[in-house]
Length: 347
Ligand code: SF4
Ligand code: SF4
Image (cartoon, rainbow, N blue to C red; front, side):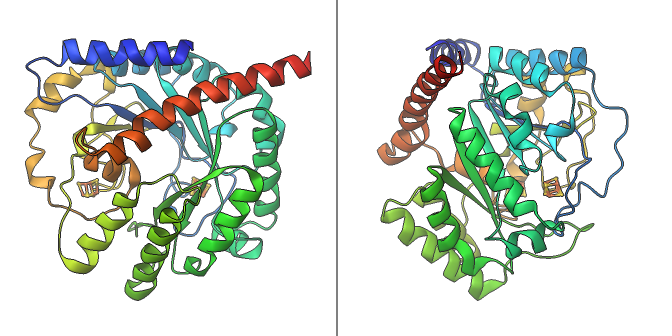
């Protein structure tokens, strides 16, 4: 219940602090490093050389600045976050302040999951297809098997776990298989559309394939399949990219921080994830309210769920309130309960 309590207090503080202020970030994303043990073809990040990474103290400084600015949700990613030896300590600090999630490719997960289980609220493991399809996209043989072993162990440890599936030119026909696999493993699926970065292989799905995939996902969602994104999310991509009806992007809801602690503006995609000012050296709320966000409102260049989903959210849509607020709260409570049960079994 501690997490729900801190989220409720956090929401209340946002309301108090946010009076008269138009914009505050709600969700933060942070790449802990660029280095990775896989070689995904559509990924620009493993191709970058890491500079000196933030120390634990600097990570804490970053988290404090984000908390002061009103952030409630913190998502860690990479590169491969499990390569960082101080990951459990970083996650522990995050879990004291935020609803905390982590994305991993799963290669090291089976061995490391116990070290992090108490500090993550949601763990995403990337799966881009079954067996060879996944290994071919991810660039290393055996990646699929290791990721599946990791997912099984994560579920066993009582962590809320999801598959993160990136739609590419080479795997749109695997959607159903991946969703069936998720059902078998007892997890849900987060679906992203690959974005073509200038420094990686172009693998984003082409027109007709993507359209068909989005229509399939809407149908599967309607049938109650375990897909994390809302139906509105898939419909917004379809409307924007195929029928010229744009969605309004609000990139200010999400703040992304690079491995040196620098803020990415205006968003993850534009400028290709290169940060500028250190997060603890600026007044984030002031910056957020001075920045010219309006020129990006009709951008619609990407379909990243960390930007699109929150941009669609409105308290006036009961379905979104249920899916994005009520359901996650219930899941946090049930996951904490499962972890406690697992603890008892371990003892
Ligand atoms: S696992 Fe993630 S960070 Fe690593 S190469 Fe693949 S997409 Fe990039
Ligand atoms: S739609 Fe444009 S402004 Fe919005 S997150 Fe994507 S790239 Fe950034």
